[in-house]
View 1 (cartoon, one colour):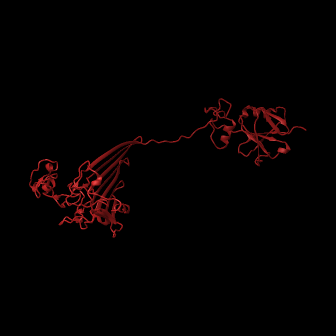
View 2 (cartoon, one colour):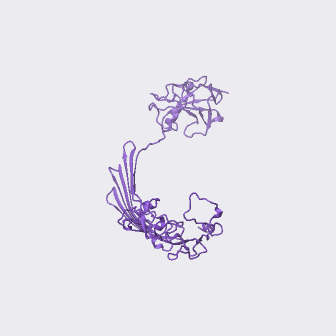
View 3 (tube, one colour):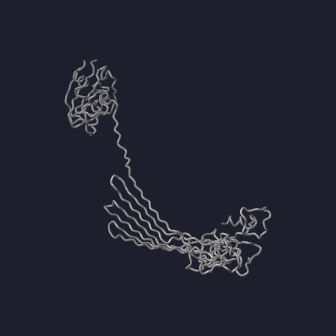
Length: 454
């Protein structure tokens, strides 16, 4: 607003008003008539607009699945923006109050507005929640006397004629929505809307009051005449002043036919008309949207990973993920049973081997062998207290286990595999077997390997 007033203050831009110009505009722009400048000012008494709002609502639940609500709202606007020509020609003389200027438009806050609305809502659910309905009806009415800060009134000397329906006034609005939840995650929805039309202003297309703005409104003739019947004064179409002519022919450069003014709804005469603002009413509109949707559930399935070669036995359940018909005694399956997981072939009794090395340097330690290939292992006493295999088994040293008489290396191979046979057969070393109670609750077979003779 301030930037616009600085641009159009009369010194930066010079405006020229041409009455009834030709199209396209012919001639040299330098030959335009020298007119008084037009300026745009800001009212020194301008203030910020403000509004007051009041709302009253009531909601009632009539049943478990049905509820109603009503809401009334009142909105009052004060000091609304408008633009007005304070140098408009006077009605009696037709001259501007200040002849040194043509138009003196001014931003001011002299407008006001009233808005009232009543909204009724209902919501219900039937068929155990599978069918839902929602409806809403709004009756509203808005009145103001300005369309905004960039719009000039039709009569700058009488602002009372500007009071009328707001540009956005819409009396009735109805909305209905329904959703039906069908089997197999299908749903059918519908939204229907119907509302009345918004108003529009009726203008003559002439500058009847000589204020250089073509937004003048006509005068109301006979209210019982057809809505689109227009009578035009002869002074505006080249006829006799004070005589009405048929506007349908005179405005289209047809023959001038004098008519009786009582047969016409609108009169276009010199000077401001008495028609109010936004007397016309636009057409209503109704629309409906129908949609069919399906809900797709995207769930991530747990990924089951199988080692490529957990057990060398082709009959084992760990072999390429094929289930087994019997209990697997490989190290992986035995460890899963020790951890509380169910085996994949039954519930056979658990057996294990505890190997104790009598070397004084290793007493108090527990050696655990990696059992990836225990079923193919062959043990050999290579040095005092040192076990080795021909397939390169890995050894890890752990703290002593107080639950065993002597710390040991625990594993769970197949009872009929090479490791059990190596321990029981001796392979060149003397073995002593005895039953002991391990840290688990079930008994296990324990074999002791003595150190080699010095």
